[in-house]
Length: 386
Image (cartoon, rainbow, N blue to C red; front, side, top):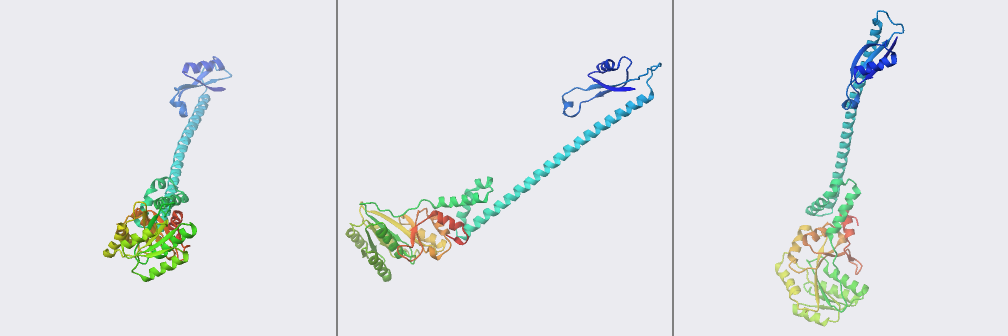
């Protein structure tokens, strides 16, 4: 017995193929309309599959033996079973693939959440470090807020820290120092509260210009309230070989400036004034604002503050002395504190440029121009290390 399957677009076409191959004696034992499998079923039409049999010995009666029909039916059942198994396997594969995709998405989401938590913890650590080094909460929050766009897309801790560091440097701004031009006289007042070290600071600046920059320097002191301050400045003046005049009134001050017309830089030490004493402050305003220097002499005024003073007190001092036209801020007693956050606080609160930092009693060594990089590093370092 020969049994074969033939396919065609129609039954007639399939039968024709069977006759051509098996001969006219072939008998069709089964006809079945078939669908294409997989994606192809969407684009191709159904087709006809016939099962044809040929008995090598042709029966006279022309009837198909029963065993042939049973065998063909068994083959059909096996084929149907196989197709069903394949379809079920495909469905299982699709379900498994979707489950795997869901697991991968969940895993990725957990990893992203973990990184986000790590980033938030690191940013909080940086913020706390600024607060620990006495940066005011207002400005610490401002700095973090201004790098939020970076925080949304960046998870690298070094990059975030570098961004905060650069932001602090930018907020510290351009540094303003005393600059003396040739053939152009300048008078510089140092003002501030009592006990901040104005006298020592003025001696350091005078020594630097006289000894290191070869500038002709003269000194005037209006701090007649403290005899010790006058004697101290006289000692410094003798050591660095610069002239010194003591004045009590604005008129005496104006006369002293005239006598020093051959000097390039005149540094003026003023008496310390409490920001709580309005009368004393008015005397200082009168000296600085009402002195008659003429159009050819340039006048500058610098506020001297101690880094050991509390921020709230520093703000009050700035509010009082801010009535004068200030050119910059000088900070003293850096050697007596580990926190430099107030340098940034006062810069942002006043809008005044930073000038000098004094960190000891040695003249002229213990004074330097404010270094924004050093300040930023100290603000972000553990214990304000420099």
